[in-house]
Amino acid sequence: MVGAGAAGLGAADRLRQHDLEVTVVEARSRIGGRVWSNASLGATVDLGASWIHGVEDNPLSDLSDGADIDRVSTDYDSYAVRDRRGDLVSLDQVPPALLEVAEIEHEYAADAAALSPEATEEGDDLGGGDVVFPGGYVEVPEQLLSGYDVLLDTHVESVEVDSRATVRTASNDIEADAVLVTVPLGVLKARSIAFVPDLPEATWAAIDRLGMGLLNKVFLEFEDVFWDRDAHFLGHVGPSRDRFVQWVNLVPVTGRPILMAFNAGSAAEAIEELDDDQIVAEALETLRRMYPGELSTR
Image 1 (cartoon, rainbow, N blue to C red):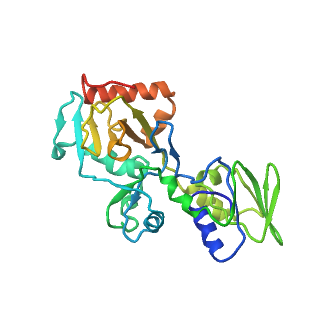
Image 2: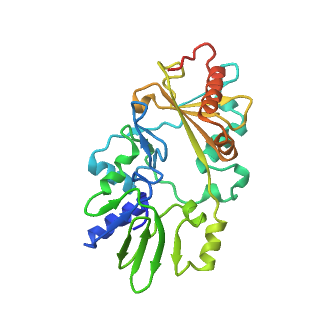
Image 3: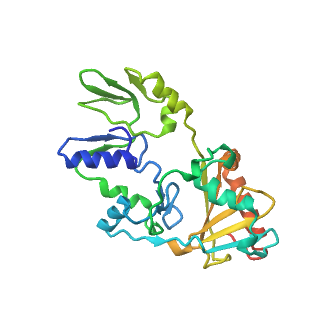
């Protein structure tokens, strides 16, 4: 198995249940893939995936229930929007551009103009509401770590298939009856792993055509709460259409004065060009407009 994200660990667990010997190889120093929990702020926050979207009939809910993992519900109707003067904006007066960014671009990690007209209609939504994890989303894939080996910090250079399969890494070769590759699309696009024999041309063409979104999160911790404490989400109607216009209040989740800002698509790409100090400065400038005279940083 190449890749210790949700797909790789889920497949490894299923194979283990069928009494097959499994080894998972992961390039990162952690498991989880897009699930990336971090406790450097003194509370655990998720740099990657945050929510179970729809808890009813969801296998992630089953895993969480089985391990008695703590969860906190999200109320999407709990929203406080402020303008550049710090005045509250009625939800029925929120500009359509802000709704487009918050409900489409942040949801699909791309500019609305770059999405297919059918993009927002695909798939069926699961019911029961959404939840987040005070202890970090990583608690969920950790439930799948049993009965097989996981090799971290192991970069795969090639996957070769003949009479048997061989996974070649920088340090050693691993032989197996079969290899299941569950690496991210970006790894495939970058041709970081060689395949022998090569993947079919049609497969590479499909990989190259698929688009990739970009969603950035910025976390800020403060000495105390100066924002709308009871609101789960904060919005900003300001000079920018799409930069630092939506914030998540993490007080209900972490119990600490932490805010998280979303930026997606071209806004996220622009922020990627800034260093950390510049990003924090822009984020704080937005918050000062939303809450004039009330901002104190840690």
